Length: 597
Image (cartoon, helix red, strand yellow):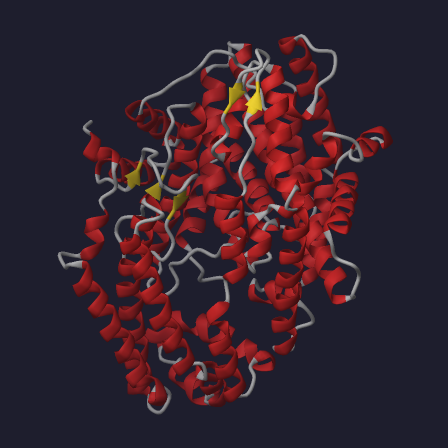
């Protein structure tokens, strides 16, 4: 395979046009939407035309935005792409202000719209408008909405400031190894790699330098977070919500009580988390010949055999692992490889990490950005992101109006494929205890990182917003203490372990709670990682063990887009998260895996 095949075919998004031509087409489409806007509700013909023009506009927008944003992620400092992003944002804000009274018009003419929607050919639009009608209590006078829309031009500023601080301004000190040599730490990737190094002195110094780098900005970060939460809660209250968390729950069609129930259920993972941590520590003590496991020891790979794979081998492994999902599913994965959906390789100024695109209506390729490094972790990442892309494929194929996947359950598709890969590898190497332990550790680390750890973060955010709303002092120290409270709530932390957080170098770890990007983005989100992990593990375990009904249900789930409420979408999998059953199922699955560890 030549290097061209390691890049993605973004030019296919242009549909034979130049970028300037596509941009002009988008501007014209936006203007056409606005020209219809004042009269969209007056007749059924106007209403249908409005729906058609908006759909066309969304498709053009998806091609343009994905082309520009994906190119930007390939080169984050490229002035061409940065310029386009700024130009689009400015124009979009202007259009948003012009049509800021849209929801007011929908509610004012609710009866006429409901009458139009009785036409069977418009049935797919019913859910969208029912959700809009629900906002009746939360929509303000048109002039106020317009003023708020103008003020929203600066929305995202806190997120951008956080990103600039943490990605650009915070630098990591060089770390000394056991030979007193200075090792440069340039990126988060360097941190992760050196924490696996066999040199324990280096691991310790990397761990300290990493956490200390954030801790020196703890006051700045805590005040940035405070004013972000203050703004979010103020905006929510202006729109007649109790607070920011309530507004976020409302948009996900759940009650806040669902979130607190999830917290209670994940608290029940405390014992299996402790069981895993103890088992891991015992293995690490033997492997590393140490008497006590420290935080900088826990990232060491249990398998010292360096398993390196090529991109071509990765494709073969992933296809074989996901074969239980059926012929159509695997044929589309092969298409993703053959038709260049994936940007595989890292390069200078490329975004770190990986993602599968959103904004997929009207697309036929569902692109993935990778930083492939030849390790099994990268193979796992490929499987994970393909899960998202296959979700996009099935939803676009089956949903004309609502193909976009709701973020509430988006991770289920990717955790299922990621877990199927791990179960496949566990079975393939079942006679090699070292490799079995490596893959069980991988699965366990992912599981507890997305359940116990993310729920600790989410519960922190839940309580932190209460502090802001109740006028309780919000600073670096109060945030760190609240994080300690969360660690005690979800992990079996001894009094001795708690005391260590007051001492060097362990105290720097508590700055972790101030460097969670989602906290600054204005989306009460991180608890949804637990939903993805719990459901994905149940689904993958059943499919791997030959449950054909679950396989069929999984394809129905992928095909549903956002045509149902989030909890009803998950029920397509036979999983009801409002009951204790799925959480008990997961505990049983984890216990079975731990028996092999």
